[in-house]
Amino acid sequence: MNAKEAVAKRILELCEEQDIAINNLANISGISPSTIYSMLNEKSQNPGVVSIKKLCDGLNITLRQFFDSDIFDNLEQEIK
Image (spheres, rainbow, N blue to C red):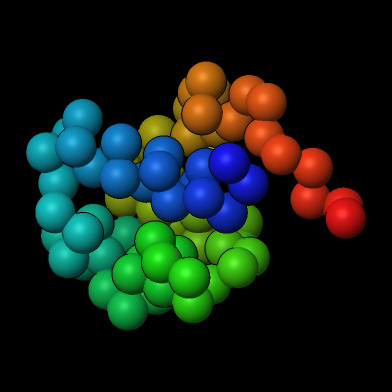
């Protein structure tokens, strides 16, 4: 799994944990639903840290909590 896929998986995991739909996450985070959906699919290959921080604010978690997941262990090498 690469870093982009891990971020997408973590967003979905947190939404499931907090029982929040993607559109609701967009509303509470101040990010457009299309931006979040592009982070979840192939459109955005590099989700920005500012967007991730806004998602964290909407989810009432810190960036540290966002990245504190086994999902981010053993990611594939990004430099090819």
